[in-house]
Amino acid sequence: MSPVACAQMDDAEGPPGPSSSSLRPCEEIASHFIGAMGSGDLDALSRVLAQTATWSVGGNFAFSGVHEGLGNIVSGLLLPVGALFKPGHFKVKVRRLLAQDDYATVEYISYNVSITGQLYEAPHVLCLEMQDEMVQNVREYYDTQYFSQFLGDRDSADGL
Image 1 (tube, helix red, strand yellow):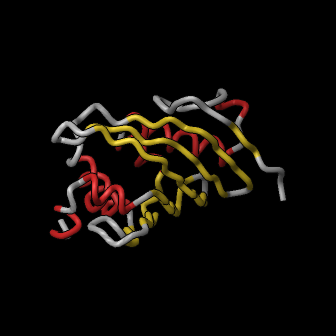
Image 2: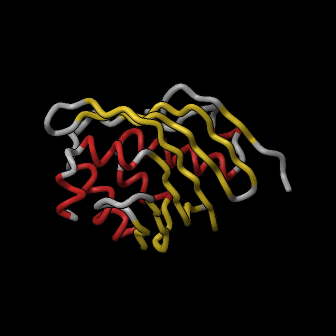
């Protein structure tokens, strides 16, 4: 088992952290993944997310569950969540990136502005599992009750 890599970062606008030449493969993939998320670049995110990827979200609201396949992740999770917020406002501030073997964990603060003008700020954790230099599994942890309440419960009741 290789040693655990740990990086503390300030934000993720573009690929965060050290230059990619100093990163191990799983760190580099995780860095590109969170950089693409932080910039809202779905094309870049699609280049590091496997076609057969899964993205799991806990809780009991519209986006909870396991989203399977890149197309379903984009159309059933990323685009609908993005539609709840004003374009160009999403930012992430990475607090830590831990990586070992084919796994990485990213702790970050998510910032956004809803379409109604409310500021969203909440801690999130992503657990990423890599295979063949692509993100194969994403497990996302955050306060889904706060997120649902932030949306005014309208979306959790509708099921979108």
